[in-house]
Image (cartoon, rainbow, N blue to C red; front, top):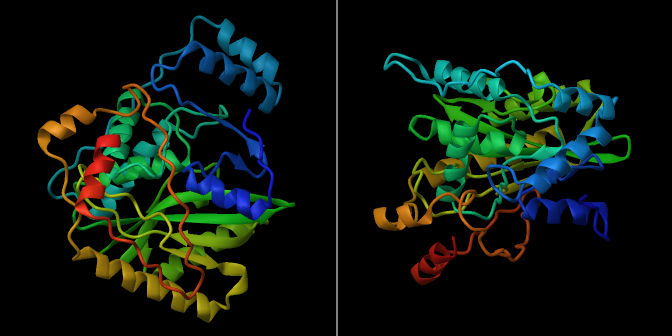
Length: 335
């Protein structure tokens, strides 16, 4: 089982997010990540059931009932949304959210798809394809990757990661959704145990309105929203080798006045708009893409450690270091 490392809670939270696994100790409750790809190997499979028996009410009886039944009903396979040319953007987003819901939230305590935030976008899109093929239950970070994949062919919709850190009863909880922006309105896609902490229709006039709606939902569960982390717009090129900017702005909500928070969110909105016109790094050639394959189905890649950069606190602007073409090519080889 994954155990908290030594150090402060805040330090562990930051290290946890650098590894791309925001929920590894969500609220102090550990869970596993399937790192062996699919199909799930025997060791991971048995470990999952042992963990289910520990974390679920009446877990031992539940496991025996499920595993001892050889006549389970066939689970329907959700269909990836298909649209008519006249389907509006809000209707398409609702269809995507319906598909994510049909996959269902993963309550097993084992995340089936390993998501490394340091991977290039093209590798994460390969994982999203696996999600549509396997149709397994997912957690919130997986839902964000899937949402990006399903909206790539919607150039009128800009997508950005939007994550939250809340506090309740001495524990910190992490959650992430995919923010969307189109036609001057904001919304969100995602999955959660809570109905009002995932999908938000495309009806919020500003990023401030969207964040406040999530804040109100958290307060309804007696959680105090501590931090909001907002990334930049994600490229629509599924073969892009750039990394997702997961937290361009880090806002200490409990330390900012309402007006200060509004100004910071307006600043971030301007930063995102400026990124739209900037050219993305060159994508790999067709032959190179074919040789890359899916990271889940090939041999495990070497672990790539990313040096921790200084976070941009509230009110400061993050400066991204530009990589030379040689560095970028070297990184492609390691994917």
